[in-house]
Image (cartoon, rainbow, N blue to C red; front, side, top):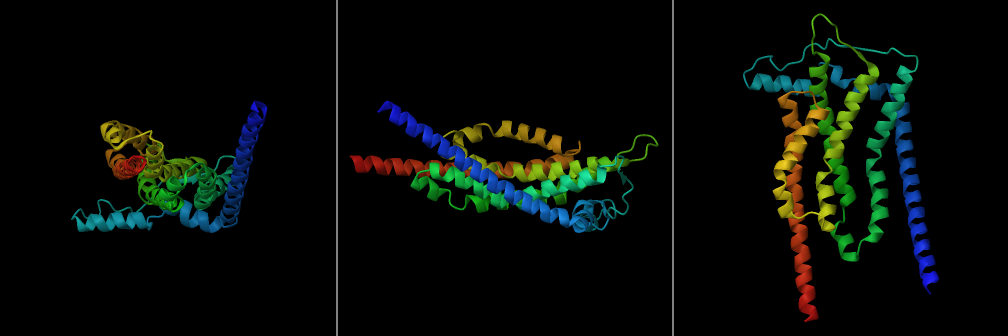
Length: 279
């Protein structure tokens, strides 16, 4: 009997591995398909998206200029000229940049589908009530991810590029390597998208009983410090950009606390109902 149970456990473990392999395979297919679309759309992707923050007519710069005029600051916030240049110093530089943009773009575009595969792997391990309580998690995670990507691309990336690209030391001219430029834009954009997953992460941790609303409120100050550290890593070293990153993250953290509070309240109600039915 014991050998039979061990065999069943082993088969169950192998089934999980097979399911994980299948979900990873589908996720890879989705990412490669999206990356191929990005790859063949090279001109539009680079001219309008990647090099957009280098254009003085970029929507963010126009918004800054409009805000500057509204507040009576004149042209103080207007970006009229971008002086730093992009260069390629290696034979494979342009092609490597194309591959990097395609890979990251493929992951971003395919995020809802890849997260859906991850959720399909996790969902069978939940009980019926738990699965119903997290219905729509793929939609929520996708919306938050694209909100974060948009925030990183339209707010943080232009600030970083303007600060770092025009930072002067003596008479040294800024001639930025193409890969350095791409890594800056990509890391900021992707990191912002992942950071915006805070409410989803807190939701699952609360469901597993690993965090409580009281504990989250207790570590609010620690979260603020950690957020400022992360903001300092993915943004230029100025207070404005760090605050711009920290504010939405802290707001998402507060949303996570409310979500955890709702989960705990629901779990307590279900336990009380179960106790009454047993008595």
